[in-house]
Amino acid sequence: MKELTQNYVHRLFIAIFERRPDRPDTLNKSDAVCKPIKFLFDYFDRQAEKPWSELTNNLNQADRDEYDRLESQKVAHIWKSNCLPLRFWVNIIKNPEFVLDVEKDTVVDANLSVVAQVLMESCSFDPPCIGEYSPSSKQLFAHEFKTYNRWVHEYYGYLSQLRPVTGADMNQYLEEFSQRYKIDRTDALSNLYQYGLQSRQMISGEMNKRCSMYSRFQSLFQTDK
Image (tube, rainbow, N blue to C red; front, side, top):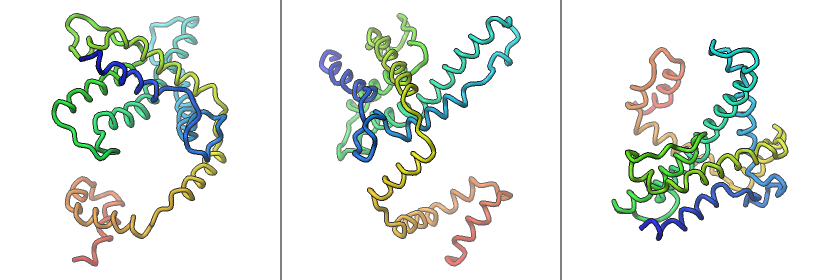
């Protein structure tokens, strides 16, 4: 069974982590990545550069710089993975009906969950340790994990070397994006209002009554009493 699906899984991972220009023609092809992703990943890199060695007392001064460098890389890697492949791609893989008009039965769902798990494990900072007691879903792709993990590291490393995206670049990108995909704001607000009205009790129950948002939220529906 694995031989039948391996090629498709391999091609999927190539599509996710391939280093190539982004598809929208409004982007600068030399950027080779969607600008918001580059902008966000650079932010993660800056925020991860902290003196992590101050949290431990087991290091001498000579080892602190190397420890800080490695910890900064690990933290940034985790943030990037949670933001893009794990938050976006894993969700799409496990739930293709979100973007495609398809139905999935229990067998397909189980297989897609295995593929999603492989992606999750591959996004770890270090390749997963596979042993005889590891789940069968991990053992199935034991030989591929090292390669996929390397692809993830190379992808993040490549993005970090690209030209930085400035705030002005992001503003221009978002303006172009909003012009390209016109949204009916009245219709969008109407749908949000209907959702809030239907879920008013549940949302109110989750809010802290002492929070300023609570009274503002309640005021939206006072005319409906």
